[in-house]
Image (cartoon, rainbow, N blue to C red):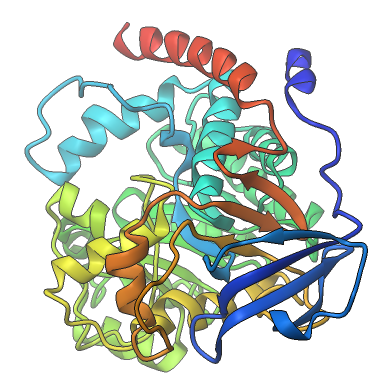
Length: 440
């Protein structure tokens, strides 16, 4: 892995200063300012206001020519290990959810090794950065390469310059002897990274239906009280039925009965739930993540927005493009989404701030993450119609520039922290080996 070092560029520390001017700047929910400018220094917002009010300065200035500037985007449920799966043909039928898992994803994650884990993360992060994503909560699985896998992914995050919560997906698929290795990978990583400014850990669980009663009891016994879980919850009816067959009201109820449910729990999908499950979500208020493109791809249904009002959007490994996912969500719901700006901006900002203090808002003194679109509004824009500019103007296209902690990660089609052409050579080699092993 030593060859990796030459592929990353110097200067990934916060720049001494840059001024972005002639922009339309918004945090997505509390303010929108046209003809605006923001000054960045030492990784933080130094000043924000009208371009005409800028004081004279020798600081480098970039004219954004009216582009729309957003906060750095969050993907709260990703599977970076799937980034090299493009072109893979399932090894068997995929006519239901369980067969999709068995004949594609579970076969893939058993094929991953150290090299493919690392380059999957690098490639997935590069794609995410190009779409303005600066924070990712990743849910990893590599059943024959468990120990040290989260550190490999962490290395990719640090090289690219993105913040993240990382976890390993525990399940019974590799037998009871692998359980302790999976638990230790999560717990040790979390302990080592508590209160880290860039990378932290969670306790990853696959889903209720791949976790036996014995396994759940072991997790309950060993999990530190402050360590939150990240789990697929009620994604398919099979998950719900498994819980009912074991005398629980549903997937959320089972988690609660084992003491695993809290306000910091991450529950992805939440489609097939009971009324008891919905009541627990309303009472405890865990983080609920809808993944509309993945749900459509797997034909598992859609989350009931009449019963779950507060949620954020993830991609479930389908893509790194979170604004494209927002557009899909809008179109699938025939335009019927309550509080879309809260879903995309307010609630993600609160979530980022919960784990990475001083990051989640565009205010003077805050650490600065920005997604600078290539979109220049030519019609009137304000908070009332911002969502429609995103859906029909930005359209989920790549950004002009992405900034994280004051570092320009991507600008005008070129990655700034990584030598992408050189990286792609190694990504292709890792893909060749991975796909060869996948079919053997």
